[in-house]
Length: 458
Image (cartoon, rainbow, N blue to C red; front, side):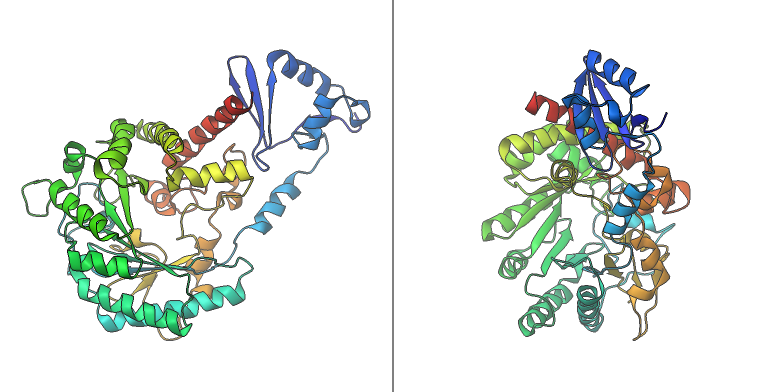
């Protein structure tokens, strides 16, 4: 039939208690209908054309592109979105791995797990290497601003390890160099700095320094003592827990007014207690800047619970409910919520996808710190090195669900971000495969968002 109508190829249906949500994966438009209305819509689509439509219900579906003409070529809609996202490198983040050494032996550590066996050598970054890397990054960021149509609004430097405070003198020297470069205009004034630490080596001197330079200190803490000590133990300490020493560091940071964030790994040990842990972070630890990090498989650690991805998704949803009630921002969930509510495209979940450079203690430069041990996707740069022209960064910059045909039929296509390329490569052999554990999280989060919207608007 000429001008016959059908549901869009990007429409997905969510059903609950006699109500169906008709959802468009590209536009995030959603319409809720009851069983009678849905049956009527399906019946009319079987024989109606645009010329037959003269009621508000069908007009709404057509306007929101949930219903399209039978011969509509919807590839163009996808191509428009593909053109709107980053398709080439746009470097705005520098990871400086100050050392590959750590005083903890956390059971699930993906950095330690990036080594297929014991480390051959403990390495600490030198001052010269760190400052060279920062100056090199300044050039990369300047080029990103000139070369990219995706302007990098907030550049960042992340100090990482190992445990970066093992090499604290180089941390101090590098931060002071960054301050000089910001003052001279070589680095932008709005550049932010973070340091990821296990918290055990924090002294008052370190905390005051971080506060002075407005550095966010992201402390790894998995919850109250029983769950934290289940995985985060001292190296060579006969599985002795680290909780007391980590909390001492958190207390010092808070006392001097340093920006403090808890980085909580959602492990198989704490996932079922996560809402209680979240409340404890707020009321017990007294920190309201919290981020959750699902586990990653590595050469030395494999997730054993097949239900782990779903447990993580449900636990993080429950934590988001608490956060919303208490006015707390949790970044991982909020990225998806923002995409859903604002109708924006969340095209990548990882800065490794074209937006960062990682510097190892030996000076090698790569796309992702999860490959620090194997050295895959790392190169030994010369003075002419340019990530904008290198095949690694070019390929990773295109790694988005919107460029992955296996994802085109997914309901969470535009709010997912694609998860972790390393996890996909570790489990399935290529960064272009689907990170299935993250896929579960994205789909279950979307399902909750849709029905939460229904409850808020019915």
